[in-house]
Amino acid sequence: MQNDRLNNTLQEKLSGFSELPANSTFSVQGSWQKLEAQLPQQKRRGIWWYRSAAAVVMCLATALFFFKQDKPADVAIDHRNDHVPAPTTHHAPVQQVPVASGSTASTAAVKKTIQPQPFRQPAAEDHNAFSKSVPQPTIALPVVPDTSNKSMGTVALVPVTTVTPAVAVVKPAQIKVIHLNDLNDDPYYREAVQKGKSNFSFSTPFRSAKENESPEPRKLRLRLPVSIN
Amino acid sequence: MEFAQLVKECRKGSVTAQKYFYEEYAVQMFLLCRRYVKAEEISEELMLNGFLSFFTGLSRFEYINEAATIGWLKRIMVNECLGYIRKKKPFLTVAEEHATEVGVEEEAVSNLSAAEILQLIEQLPIGYRTVFNLYAIEGLNHKEIASMLGIAEGTSKSQLSKARQMLQQMLMAKDQQYAERQVK
Image (cartoon, rainbow over all chains, first blue to last red; front, side, top):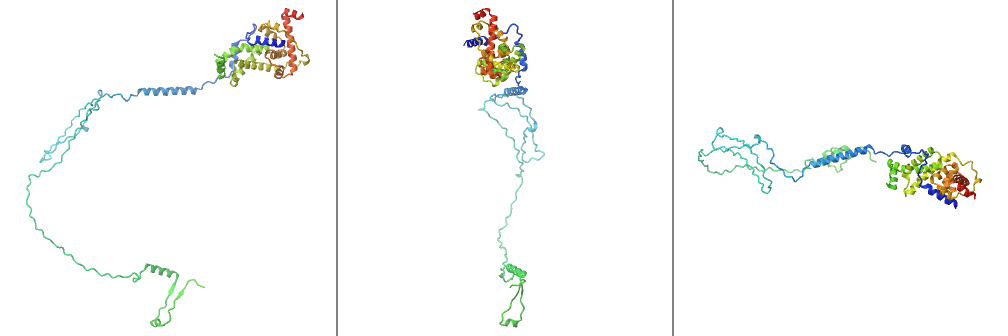
């Protein structure tokens, strides 16, 4: 019990005590330098972070610069100070004077006028009262020959006669109808004969008139290339 | 800066916060190491090792409050000192049969200042001093001390008894009135 109280007293006295003895050579700053050398250094941010951050800032600045330069769409266009180029000849319309009747090529002079077109100031911004006049181009008229001075003669009329054309009447020729079998030119028959010639050979003996009169029937001998049993 | 914020910055690796923390607790931890190890240079070295372990181990430390954090720091320092003391093997020659219960009057100690108490503790031999520190100041029991120092419980008890006897003698020598009262 006595020792427990002693322990408590010691703990109370020593727990928050932080006073160096007079003869101590301990230096907080000096020991910190030793400790700092041993401590693992905090990782530095890689240089890529700085580079990427700078690139992003540059992109934003560029985008902002171009965005500020854009004009808004509702600004009115002022034509008062616009410079108008001088008109050129090759774009000007050509005007031709129509040729009078009876004039020749030498007398029919073609007047070619090239007039500079003055620049017309566009109308004011009053879109309701806008009007535009389009100049109609002059179209060259075709030259018509003058026939008013020529005289006309009378033409004698010939009486109308009716002519009957002579048509030779030919009697149609009589057509003789011949059956195909009579021509002995049946393609099926010829084909069959050709086939028979290739596989069989027929021999029919010629008989005299007498033999034909005999009652015996005519014998037909068939020669086969292969003997039949 | 609040203590929690300070610990958070130290955990991130901020050298400024670590320096601030070190300056706050360096002397206290140095004196703690001095209670175990007499030599100043060795105490400083052990303290620096303890702070290094503390700062590098902060990432694994779960912050609760200031007392728990400082308690953890003290424990680191004590372990550093015990690691050094274990190499010296100061407990081999101590016999267990010498362990007897010796009481030190609490009034005599309470009259002393903290510096005087520290001075008395420093005069104890290393074995006595270590067990006395662990038992009387750190509040560990003999079983814990025995396991920490790698000795038997009886050895721890006898070391404590011897430390108290020695302290009593030192107190008697220091305070003559205290000695006269003890004689009566």
